[in-house]
Length: 427
Image 1: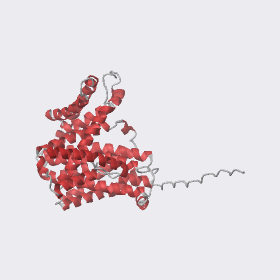
Image 2: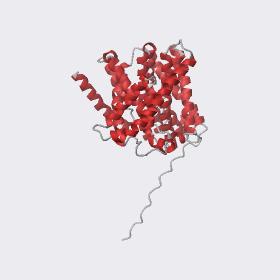
Image 3: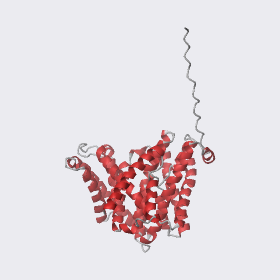
Image 4: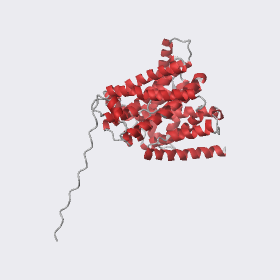
């Protein structure tokens, strides 16, 4: 037990070190964490996935709850208003196309059912905001390009969670039920979960001012999030969707009050403050650090075929994304920025947690789905990082010229003007 606690402390310390290196070198902190897990698990066999037992499933569920709540908390409803044009078009077309293409490829290569193939497609179609943001900080791109990418990453996360959970709900019921009945059951569970989350959100935001007067009040919000997830499942709703919806309500309460509840008392319905949001940022960081190491431990290196399929899907995501960017993004966006938009599609924590959740609920097919998605996460992060580095160094201009012919070249930087010389003084 002492060594386990020591190990967790070292991992969290390394997580901060890798995160700092990410900001300076653009090397994603996900990669060293996964590699550390791979070394400890399948390579050196210091730890085995079976060693975690039920604790592994509990940890996965807690990570899912944190990811879902944070995804909802960070989602801004107002971003949809500015996304009526190219941002929303690119997000929706890319997600639908990626889901369909990945599903076809996995159904062909793995020989799995269409439902399971669509689950993989929905998860792989996601993009990670946490990985994209530091990469963009090192690249010179227009503000419009950054807005499009941030919007896409946030929306695809919601798309991926909703569709993957709906398909998982359908798959867990088996093939004896008709598609109509499955759709009705999913709509019912989602509807109950969302309705309960809305009621819970208004209740908690209404008493938040009183809660803050209590000792250790910040952790009470996290406890209430756990209650929302569990109670929603007990009453027949979907706990994951309820958690996501609760996060959206908590993160957008000011807008909800202003637009839809103008007659209610503004002082009674509050929103989370900076300290409370920082608390959830810390929790997400802890779970992210530990989960990606756990993910590396669970990877089965013996299945080279699944690793190869993961690499193929990562390449397919980039290849099929390029024409969508070419036609869905305004021609005012330069070729270089189009190359950046194409490269910024790595998978991250949302994909990893959804894969682990599916593996726990679908014992037979879930292990294969988990291995493939874990491989996609690893290779997609590597490929996105390599492409962004090549774009920054100017070595991929031929890619932009070949793929984004509808768009103009970036204007050349003006040559530096020599400094004016001061007249020499006469003695």
